[in-house]
Length: 95
Image (cartoon, rainbow, N blue to C red):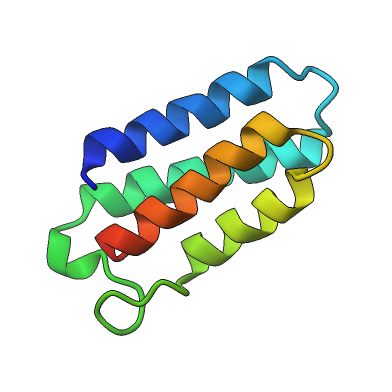
């Protein structure tokens, strides 16, 4: 996986959120904060990006994406699917 695929997943999440104006404000804020954190992490040198042990797939960004995915499973299935893909990508690139 590369940064392009990560940005594509983030774009799908934004598009899904835009299609659901009824999404609670708190959920939108959490999605925006997650995206900002990922973008900030991508600006760091590659060696500084890894959470915990090298390749640790349980870092705080992955945990937040997993929590949002579970929260959206019933109410926003498109966002949930994009978040699951995001979790996979983050784990593969070690963020």
